[in-house]
Image (cartoon, rainbow, N blue to C red; front, side, top):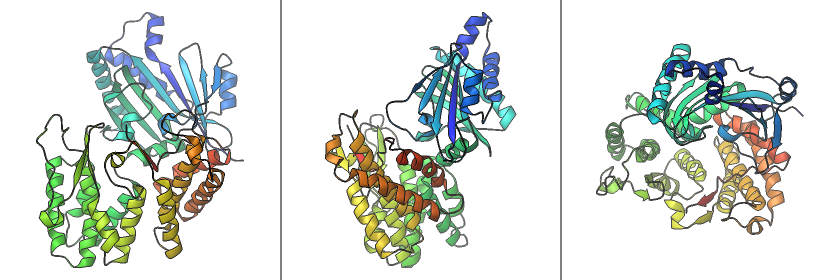
Length: 448
C-alpha cells in the first residue's frame, strides 16, 4: 500500500544554549531557531532517520488519531539532545517521511520572548518575504505548546513557516511538501472552502453591477466598521433586486455576517454592545457565547434561502452550507451540553443526493456524509471522553465506518480541481481502513 507520512522534530534551543554556556541575544537566538528549519532533511524516510539516530527512544501514540497538522502523528521518538520527532501516516509516499520541524526557545520573560519574536520575524521576512499576522483559530493552535500571544505565518508553494510567541516562550514551525499544502489549504483563508467557492461565484456574477464585491469577499482582514458597512450595502442592494439576484446577494451577506461576528467585542468588556445589521425586515440575529467570550451568527439568511428561495441553485447552495453546520446554527448547541447532529445530517444528505444525483454540490454533500458517518463510528470507540458513552453510538457503528470510507472515496472522485478538502480526505481514508480512531467530532456538538 502506498502511504505518505509526516514527521515533526522539536528542538529545545534553550537547552542547547545552556549546554554551550554562550550568552545569547535576540538576533542570535533567532538565527538558532531558523537554522533548525533550514537544516531539516525534508523528506527523509523514518527508517533512514532511525539509522542515523540509534539513541532515539520511540513510543506509539495510544490516544487515537488527530488530523489537524498540529497533531498528526502516531509515533513519537525522543533523543537525549532535546530533539523530539513525531511520525504519522498518509497515502501518497512509500514509507514515513519528515515533513514538519519545530524549534522551541523557552522563557517566562514575556519581554525577552517578544524581542526574540521580532528578531525572528525580521530574519524570516528576509528569507521568505513579508509574512502575515496569525489571525484565525486554526493558525493560532498549530503545533504550539503554549497559548499563542502573537506571531506571523509565511506561505509558499513548498512550505509553510509559523513563528509565535506563547506563554512558554517562542516557537518556530516549518511544514514542507504535502503536509505544507494541507496546512496552507486549511489556514490561508478564514472561511471554509465551500463558502469561498460560493463567494467567488457570486462576486463574478455581480462584477459589473457591484464592482466592489470582489474585493470585499477576497479580503479576510477588513476592519470591523468597514465590513459592517459593506454588509449593509449588500442588503440594501438585495432589497430592490429581482429574486435571482437577491438570493445570490443573501448568500454573500450571510458569509460576511459570520466573519463580522468573529470581530465583535467581548460582552464583558462592552456589556451594552448590541450587534445590529440590516433594516428591520432583514435584520440578522447574533448570539453571545459566554464560554468562548465571542459572538456567533445564526445564519438566518441561509435558512430563509433553503426554505423559500425561488432560485433552485441558491436553495442548493444554502443547503450544503447549512449541512456543514450540522443543520443546527444555534449558539452553544442550543444550550444543551451535547447534541448528536450526525443522524440528521445523514438523513438529509442522503435525501438530497437521491433527489439531486447530478448536483454540482454532490461532492460537498458526500464530504458531509462521510464526516457524519465517521463521527458516528468514532464516538462508538471513545473511551476517554466523560461526555460520551460509546454504547449509545455502538449500534450500526461498524457499518458507519465503511460508509464513511465509501463517501470519502466518492468525494475524491468528484472533487473540484485543487480542492482544499481533498488533502484532508487523503489523510483520513487510510486511518479508517486501519480502524484507527480518528476522533472525528464534526457533527457532535459539545458545550460545557
